Image (cartoon, rainbow, N blue to C red; front, top):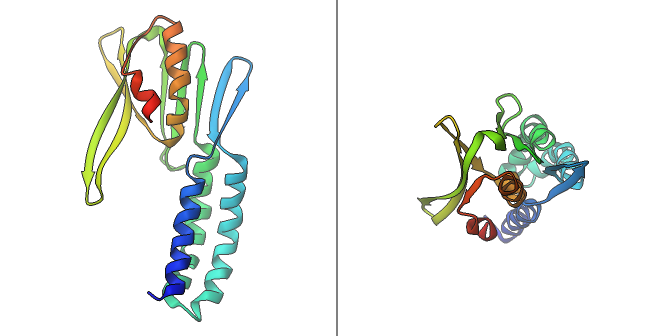
Length: 183
């Protein structure tokens, strides 16, 4: 990879890093809704529309880079863009619900605080070739003795503090609350 290609790749990484964590928090009556920022959705739409022609022109000078851009256009349009419009977390005074994942196979969770005795924020350590990373999950111990585990992804991470605050107001015992401030 030559110097120009390295700069192009580095710019893409910086842009992706800058866009991660760009969420919108809105309040509708007593419900707090978390979703991706509108401008980030617009950037993904515009980027997916421009990726194919940019890749076509780039293909003549740098075949691999042009091919990657042309391949990214349909992936952005078909997979990433719908996810950004559909992923959301709603926190109500009596519970919360979340929807995340690929649009054609979404995952969802709905938790009512009246059915929960303990809400625990747990860390999960994983190690890969880049080092050790912490992921989190919310484990709800239900009154009927069961448990419900919800992974804390990027969008859910922004809603955890509101979930904990509203659950504690409903008398739910909170464990691992200090982890919310470290996420």
